Image 1 (cartoon, helix red, strand yellow):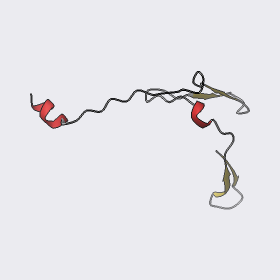
Image 2 (cartoon, rainbow, N blue to C red; image 1 turned 120 degrees about the horizontal axis):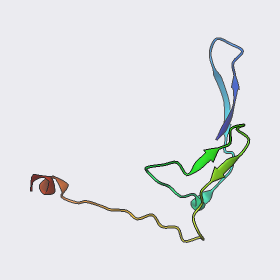
Image 3 (cartoon, rainbow, N blue to C red; image 1 turned 45 degrees about the vertical axis):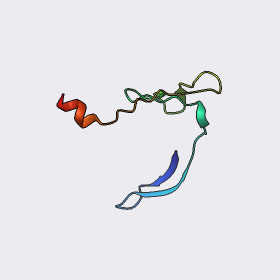
Image 4 (cartoon, one colour; image 1 turned 90 degrees about the horizontal axis):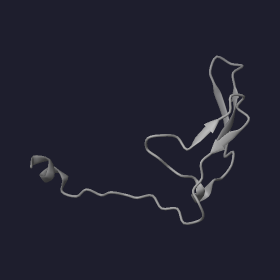
Amino acid sequence: MSAQINLRTSTVQVGDVQPLFDLGHFATFSVNRDFYVVSRDGQRFLVEIGQGNDISIPLTLVVNWPVAIKK
């Protein structure tokens, strides 16, 4: 996302927020790390995308976990 910021006053004024680009369902997601890196000059992004259109992220659902903890 991108927004214009006005610092001329004693408060920060944020303008309209606009998306920089749309990765759609191609962006991968990991809880342990970011899926993008910004260049030092802030002009480029390196984005990790999934392979192909069939991206699936495994999900583990633990049911009745309080009982499992007691064991």
